[in-house]
Amino acid sequence: MRVLRDILKEMASRYRWQPAEALLEIQAVWPAVLGEPLARVAWPVGFLNGELTVSVPAPAWSQELWYIRGSLVEHLNAALSATHVTGVRFVVRTSDAAQADAARRRDAVDRLRALAQEIRSDD
Image (cartoon, rainbow, N blue to C red; front, side, top):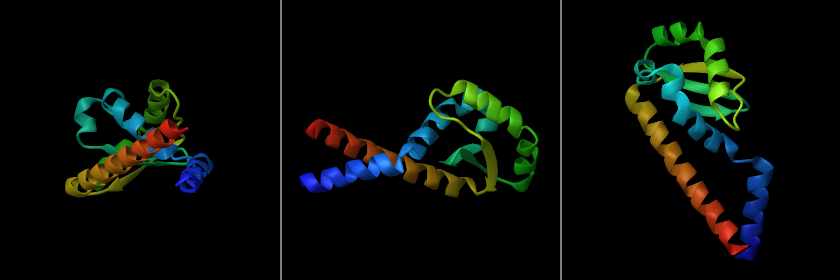
């Protein structure tokens, strides 16, 4: 079992599981940055290599939010502690699909945190 733990530590440091942590940080400040009404329509669902993916229910929302993306990135970065957003892309998804994606991501992050805690406690 010790060998598996060492492998997982190496993977965690090499591949940096921070995108999931960063997405949670972004989601925490999202309503304050975007505003409650818009946050109900547009929700961050992915974050990789500085690019934030935001789910919207229709192409019109994607187009409207595209125009404020620069300001959005600026305000997000001001509100975030460790995460740096360099760009935003918008994807059209039904609300059911977006909610299912968010639930799966939260579950995965919870499992990763539990594993990381277990690894730390064994050291």
